[in-house]
Length: 119
Image (cartoon, rainbow, N blue to C red; front, side):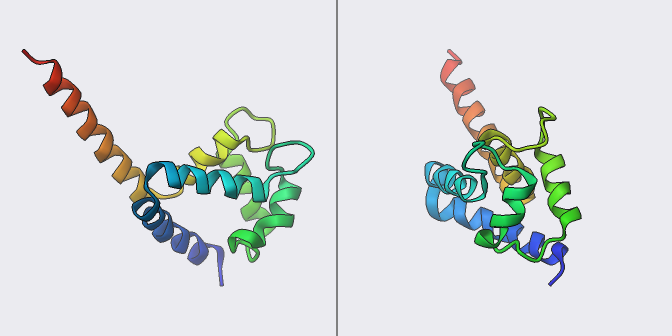
């Protein structure tokens, strides 16, 4: 199975998790995913820890190039690793459906706030 197919499976799965678990449950599960992938000594996801532990999330078929690409895409501070926050942001960015849903919920919340402040 190629990495593109694995990625599309992930894209379909994360919004389902959000619907089933709710916001707090989804964040909790993402934190658990981070814990599975991180280097226990360093407290971040490194290339080596990602490669070693990727099978826990069904990503064992990804190439080294794909794994490096994931790290680079999520590594906002340029330290070559993913912190828990960077990992969570990356998971949301990899799921366009979840991002669309989040954008809709944000717009809805902002409209409610705006309506509450109108006199």
